View 1: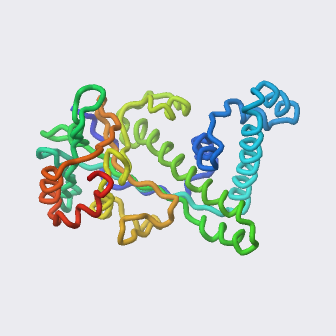
View 2 (view 1 turned 90 degrees about the horizontal axis):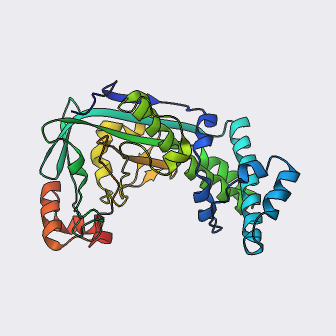
View 3 (view 1 turned 120 degrees about the horizontal axis):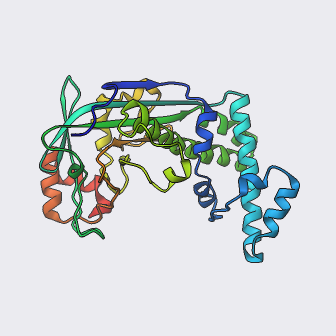
Length: 310
């Protein structure tokens, strides 16, 4: 039997300190977004002094040095921008996470909020994974009774601050603000997931705060995000609204299920020790029709939401 969460229902976190989230920024993804991919290990130490910087660059191969210099400049500019965020109190980082009783019926996850039961049909892989299984998220929930988490987090204030640079014609800094906000949103999700495992749910209370290991997904449980490969139906986000209360934390949902601000993350929390991320991939007409029936929507509507999987 899975551990009962330490707190059932909704937890609201407001004004999460920026300094708590900065260590959870996965810098490699910022470099990738800027089209200078690479791990650039040791870059944090390189910026501590001119001597460190010189030694760091010298130890790189000539073919990698030019890209590393670009990454170094971007990293320095990002650190300066984070300092501006802090000193000028630019951002507000909010999160909501709720823990609820759940069970499954076939491939459907049923979440009991206490006021209503919310049905979340899941999609099943039709091409076996490397382990030889065709996974669905419902596999990781006990049909007889279990618990599930739902979460969302957001970074507010980004658009206004970026617009200031855009008005000044500084496209570089405006873009940096937006990309940093995206990294902070993902970092907040990582930070929140750790807090969930060790405190709010508490199913792994003794897990050390080893962020490098977290980046490698070396922990128990998963947090599949809405619209991502394990949970590709973006329309599910509307069903999660009663459990998360997006408006209360400053997130608006568009008619297409996108979140505004863009620097927002939403998903499920599953604690099963064998839960894992997977790609649903392509589904056939039979599964589409069955899924549409379970979603209580027309096949035509579901074709729009699942076009990438057809």
